[in-house]
Image 1 (cartoon, rainbow over the protein chains, first blue to last red):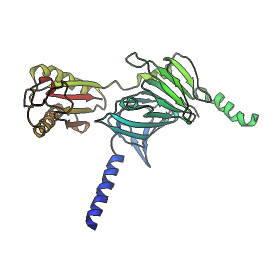
Image 2 (cartoon, chains in turn green, brown; image 1 turned 60 degrees about the horizontal axis):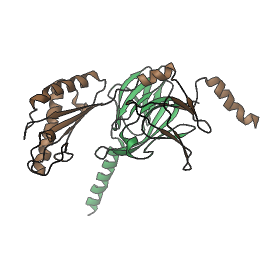
Image 3 (cartoon, rainbow over the protein chains, first blue to last red; image 1 turned 120 degrees about the horizontal axis):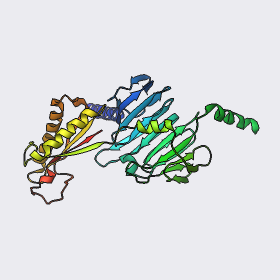
Image 4 (cartoon, rainbow over the protein chains, first blue to last red; image 1 turned 90 degrees about the vertical axis):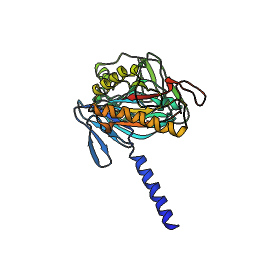
Length: 145
Length: 190
């Protein structure tokens, strides 16, 4: 009985681990100084690099990163930016989910995808001065210091 | 009071383009979208005027706007829209119909031309035969397409194959019905 409990707990731990490390999108292109901060690690931004929830996209002068998400959302992160993919959940079958991006500094161009369509303000973008509810469109967010 | 405002003014002067703003553009299909500025207390200001700029410091104010070169460069840097392909199969097999061969070539070209391309491959069947058989057949159809892409030197680490059997029929039919339009693999290339 005890052993079964341990097995169940392990299975749960594994499931939640794989959920947190699950791919949410990919880097398509990157120019100039650009890195992904993942916890304490710094991940290079080569095309095809998988993105995870919690990743922070950081660019320097002249840096730019283009990415797509599994719900068809697309981003272009501009120079001198710091953008955190704070929350991301997507059910491919039902095409519903939630997405919170923190634009701490710099700029991001966004074309929203399925998540924004799946519910009112299911996709949010937060800046140091505002919280935006995305209702399905193309826009740029700029955050000063 | 004046002292409290001073750092803000200095930041605005030094920052130059360091602003806090939302630039709303027409959506790619020409339609109109919207972004709501939420006040965190249940209130909101909806911005729906395309080609406008809204200040995000203090009360949101929107004005007509033409994008600057740096903003245009950012928009041009967006990845292209995902491309969708549907390939059809002969009854009960993983063989493509002759009509779908050129479409497969287009798919291969699309994957090759996209940096960091990924393909989401989903197989389907019509309602002829058992659910279990159809789940297996749809999975094999999806895997067949992935194998063709892999044989062309495309990194299979960037591909996923899923079989959905007779769920999501393209043409709604009853059970046990032959329907060529439902015997398909759908591919989304990002």
